[in-house]
Image (cartoon, rainbow, N blue to C red; front, side):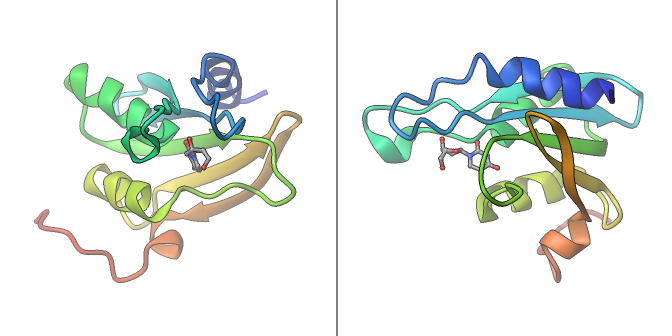
Length: 127
Ligand code: THU
């Protein structure tokens, strides 16, 4: 199995999602080959929670990394789970048009897209 799948599945077990009961795990690989993972963190004041993608990106930035190579999202749903709109923009901050986002269930990969497919005509200020 892909190490990103394993990492995302493992961190999903750590999600704090008592309000939605929808735990999500994300693992990403950077251009240097490092892997970072994060889970969603919900809050009793519902809008204050954040997504697994945001947690994983925070860990990446805290480690001094900036270049996304590949991202895996693991969740259980009747359709492959895609990053929300806000997280697409956060991923675009560190990704490229061709950066691959893979959606998986607990059994493995279900779908994959490029960042440009998920967020066409993205706003960005990078050169
Ligand atoms: N969620 C994520 O963490 N990532 C996604 O890609 C989709 C949604 C979270 C947000 C919230 O904690 C829960 O899933 C239900 O929407």
